Amino acid sequence: MPEFIVGETRCFFTGHDIGASVTLVCLHGAGCDHGIWPPALFQLENCNIYGLDLPGHGRSSGEALSSIDEYAELVSDFVETLGSDNVVLAGHSMGGAIALTLGQQQPAWLSGLVVLGCGPTLRVSERLMELFVDDPDSAVSEMALAIFSPMTRPALAERFREMTAQVSPDTWLRDFNACDHFDIRDCLDTIPQQTLLLSGDSDRMTPLSEAKRLEDGLPEARLAVVAPAGHMLPMEQPADITRLIEDFIARHF
Image (cartoon, rainbow, N blue to C red; front, side, top):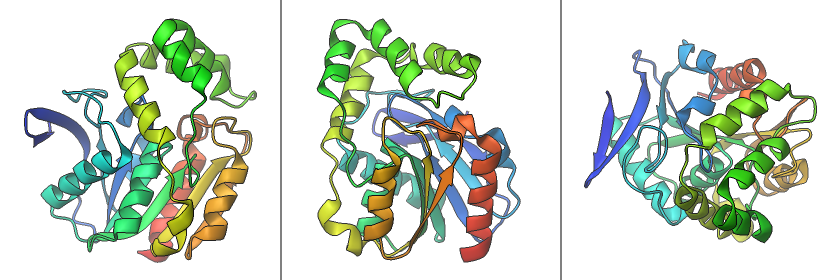
């Protein structure tokens, strides 16, 4: 099993190096793992690609981290371990916040960003966090209904509920706290990378208006709206997401 080891934490990752000039690293959102990404994405022929399970998520050991900055530091260490020097980070929701944070830090290896379901802030409702403390099962079931487009088939929401019901409440709360403290509104103009923004047309967790705020503030950003889709657009519209990312990489890198 491929692992990236930090201290006593073993982080699982999947993917491959096909000798391409650009490497795509995919970062999942709160409470999720690399399995949210379309399987076809890992078959792209124009890039090396990796999907990382952050600490405390998926097949990785340890506990979820406490801040977006801590996650960004870990992802930076992972990329440097890969030895890639022309990297595009694709991040969904919390993963998008991690990608944007690294964009602001401007490491030499970072060439581009793909940010899905994210804004310059990622506020989490106090009610949802309280529900994860008082009744985690109900919290997961309620979120599974709200996180998808009304057009999404019920089986997909059920798959999400079953997948995330295995995640500890502590992981959810750590991730949500990290998201709730994320705020780059005042420094968007310091993120110079070519950036593809992807937003679901009916995202109720991070509305389209938030993606538009990113588009307005980032120097090199283009927004594409995916429809019909809610917050989980990589699961809801995998073919469109794969095509848009593939085209972005082919055009710019």
